[in-house]
Amino acid sequence: MADLTRRTVLGALGVAGVTAAAPATAWSATGTPLLRTAADASPTLVRGATFPEGIMAGVPRTDGATLWTRVPRGLFDGDAELAIVVSKQRDLGRPEIVQTVIAEKQWDGCVHFQATGLAAGAEYFYQFRGKDSVSPVGRFQTLRPADSNQPVRIGFFTCQGFTEGYYATHRHLAAEDLDLVVCLGDYVYEATVPGVRGIDLNLYPQILPTMRAKYTLYRSDPNLKAMHAQHAFLPLWDDHEFRNNYSKDNWTLPELFFQEKKSAAWHAWFERMPVPRYSGDMTRTYRSLKLGRTVELFAIDNRQYKDDQPCDDGGSIICEAADAPGRSMLGAAQKSWLEDGLRSSGARWKVLANPNMMMGMVTGAAGERAFMDTWDGYGAERTELLSLAAERVSDLVVVTGDDHDTFSGELWDTGFAPGTPGNPGGTRRAGVEFVVPSVSSTNTGDTKGVTGAKAEEQKRLQYNPHLKQVDMRQHGYGVLEVTQDDATLSYRAVDKLHANAGVDTSYQVRTARGSSTVEVI
Image 1 (cartoon, rainbow, N blue to C red):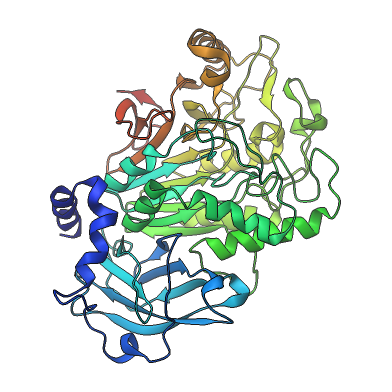
Image 2: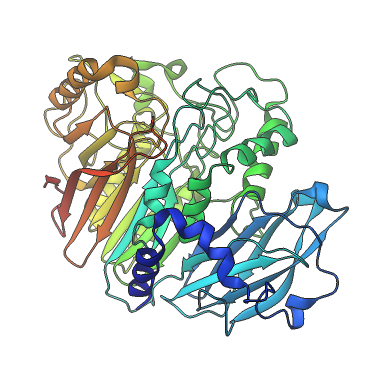
């Protein structure tokens, strides 16, 4: 019923009208917000509050989610008090929650409210309120009940350099019928590529205020805010939230006060993202979400615990150190958590949200690997993980970001299919991998043109027999639909150069339960 309700609402309002129409529903004909009783009418609510970065519902649970907004600190001294209203009704009538929350000065006016006590698999609406102003109305869906066998739909996006393209992708994501949206990393970029939206002069932010400014810039986009207002959200961390291709202790270029700046980047991310924190491990981001019996979603961190890349982080090279034992992408604690979770999961499908490509990617006849920053630079740990999957884990689907291009392939226990030139071919299938394109960040087609990109696509298919589909020209996002019997990834293509671009389903790839093979449909 929640999905039907949402489709009815979107059909009535139209995608472009969702954000604009939502606030009006929370006001009466006399111009007074509905309710305004109890906590919602507290005399200490802040006056003049604005909500320029919108609202978000993050890391959904069966009983709630983390609800987020920000009130700019220039409007008040110290902390500021807001009210929050949560209801099953779009007009916020008959609310489930009405209480006050604090926009804290130390978190730059951000609110992270843990909404609890809600029903599983239900649609909810929420709004933050000051004394004389209100935020837009947001919507989210709690996770499905533990015994649900219903299909699951998850949207995925990655790599959204602000200046390089418009965010029509997010307008279309907002209109999708989804359980939640996952960002696979690179939500913001520390550097900038000049593009259709000019240039961002905030290059390689050095201190907390300039790191915060990145999120403020990106959240100025109305389509991004509309997507956040419509779906529960799960963000992953990759590298551009701080520095391109950094590892736990190093960047490819010398950086004074590296650890201090990294800590400031993490502070800004936790501040600006709708995520709860683990009390015993305040920078942990890896977690799992159970969407009924159909899917368990594992979200991992490929950056915070990562050993330095081998062979000076080279590309299209042969690097013996890439497969050296003892080198880790995940770190010991996270790897143990992931392996235990995959082994013990009772879900029919295990979906791994993964920031960096897991399958091997060969670029030359001698077996050169494309990038040492991906799992290709951590071959021993990859083999350990995929061997476990081949032996003990059924129906593993890995959905990946970071590359900017589109790939669909089959995972073998070594990362390479039999017959891959210059690399150890696997003997057992372990799962499948779907790599979604960038929203706007530069891909191969942007640099090599259509003809050059098509030639590169053919090379990748030639040298990687595990690769079943590739497109190095499109931008957009992916929608994964998982049923009892199969998992299908629909690649949505969106032109980044036009603010009002439409959307096309460019490819659909499918894996059947028990097969670990990819079918292009």
